Length: 316
Image (cartoon, rainbow, N blue to C red; front, side, top):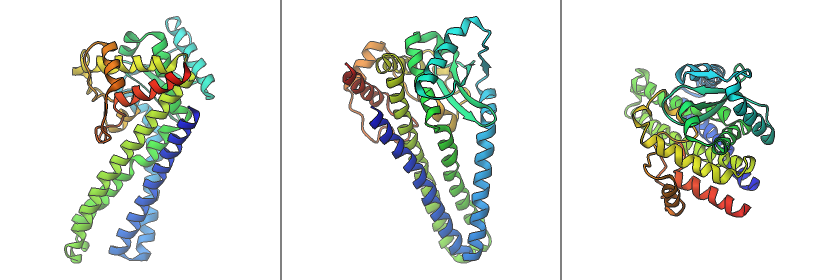
């Protein structure tokens, strides 16, 4: 299973690098065409500096914004009610080979979990209040092993590094459309701007694909690190998706946007009502088209269940 995780990890990193290289090439070509080589180098340096500054600021301060949005409460070492939770996180961190993150409870209305980090805030893992109510401790251990897998692989840093690129390309296109100087280029500026907007959309799809791979190798980490991790993670995923689609449907829109949705254990847009055992049986044999999840930040639950089932069967 380590080999599969490594392959997914390499593919994710290569995808992120490819986005950065292709985006840089597009920006250089467009700016050079309209403004000349000398200005394009100056403009590119300015854009790269802007991206770097925005990425660093977002990386440094986003944990505090996430904390406000999700109403996070730190789990104190002196809180005897959650001593078992802190011990669980410490054991998972040790087995994953990373430092123990700080634990938080998110006071929102849907069951989920997420992990994130920054140099200022350190490493953090958060569990929503409803998640504590619907999962057994073994299932929660598997979910936490998944989340700490993200910290182990530095997934948050990767998302922040490439997440702004589509927006950057879009705003360059927007600038071409409304730049008075470029109207002298005839219809070329408009055509190129429309092409850039389309590329921005494509890059967004690629980033979603990278996030789906990111979720897959975090699932593998849970299967390896947690006790009976593959089976417990399957049940946990089914419960989270099922409860999000029924009891918590009205509250799913709380404190979520595209980036924070990527950090969650399960996509909030997934819906599947019904009996947990029946849902698992359905997903284990369900055929899912590759195009089904193309606009989703997470793999279809059936794909996650089937991969975990393969891991579980190999360990028997």
